[in-house]
Picture 1 (cartoon, each protein chain N blue to C red):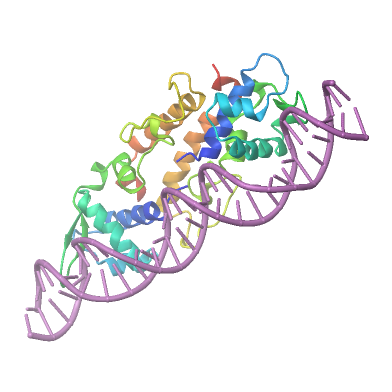
Picture 2 (tube, chains in turn brown, yellow, cyan, purple; picture 1 turned 90 degrees about the vertical axis):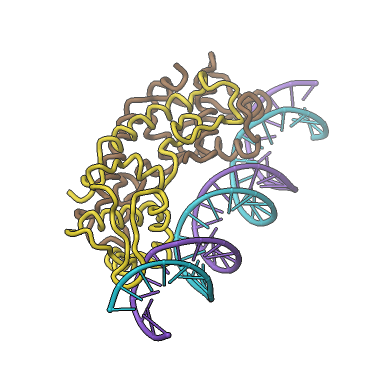
Length: 136
Length: 136
DNA sequence: AAATTATCCTATAGATTTAATAGGAATTTC
DNA sequence: GAAATTCCTATTAAATCTATAGGATAATTT
């Protein structure tokens, strides 16, 4: 299940991508337009800024803005920052790999093989979609 | 992230599918072989029986056994029973549909469109894999 | 320089879900 | 009727997610 954090983050990014100019948009406005708790959104945007997706400006006329062109931002990168691993089990994760402590062998694990296929199929979607596709 | 319930359930089903005969296998044996808490596994097998995947027999020589041939059991059905919705958001779920209360319009929702693609890609994997493929 | 506006940051509380355990009831076999 | 095994419900423990609180910091305006 997609977390609210990810859902809200995606909506906020899409909202910013759909803006005409590059002027900063205030948290309050995004929150209002997208029906998101303002304080919660605040922390999400902060993490998107710290991970290099957004820039910000303080004071009057301040707010958040996209740093890159929407079509340069891959969904793989966004999803990994917002939701974490794309894989459903750590033992098939490319970026968050971890060994399962209950499995003696990955090669012979029935779950491992299936989840590898699922991960690959999800990756293909995320790799072929950018932030620009979100607002098409 | 895949729940332990699903992971254990898949392993148990795969274990049963890999048995030669159709004699019941005891919970205790499956739990031991697959490193699963016996009590937890007990409740998982129970739910798999109630949903028609397993049969059971009580008393000495009892245990659980598969009802259908492994290749007749689609992963879509197993996953829906163990993990719930295949979709990452209820608004794109085929079997567990729910309207999002924060979205005014599904058609214009950026998250909706993306998650539809992700769901379809996962569905394709699950539809093209059966329990038999898990032990190949 | 003071007031205003808006992000920045940390901590924490509340809610929900997941994982695991407990304990006995019911049924079958021998 | 004793032993073995599943059946069932309830409960606890742990983890994670969601949201809120409250002030610090920085930029702009007056």
